[in-house]
Length: 236
Image (cartoon, rainbow, N blue to C red; front, side, top):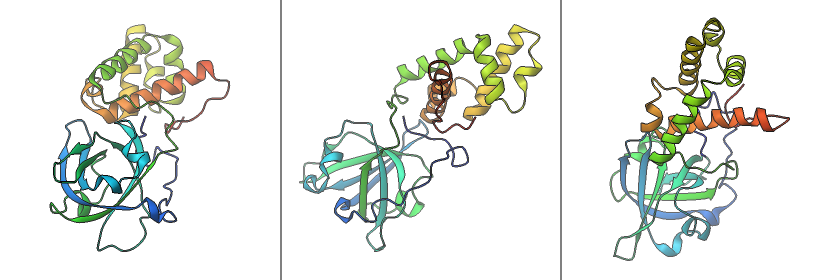
């Protein structure tokens, strides 16, 4: 799963990759930027198939990569990198293919996202070694399952105690401890605040919110099956 937590919640540093790997850089033309309607943008470029590195070209759709992009005029090294998913590649019928990535709206500069069609850009994408979780948060069926798990977990006393201790800074669950119904509602509200949502329905509509909910569920599972919990981006 891609970690879409805000930088303040994500303890990972931003590595300056691609600087010492010039052979990973290839050229392309900006085609389009599109709002997917799920909290992500698709950024599409036209490239020659032979220029795409094999680990990018033959990766399964929705594979996680670290993406760095710059316009041709920017001759410096591609220092920055953002999390991205490689979307299906399409043949344009003119010797080029359409290569698209799903990215957060603010993960690439406006100069890149909203550059004119045909703008020449430099691209580098490397498999993301920091993501070892299956990234399934985009599928509507998976989002429904995630929301259902959240609903069921809020009914469990053990989960509410863990949530109240580690992820409820406002103390909502503790204040509602005298009533099972209120405790369940307080747990649901604490989760919504933790994942940055206004309602549980946002899990169905927004891929980023869904992934944050999955991260929270995974943290809970670690406390049950792992003697030493491992952080996946949500600070306890």
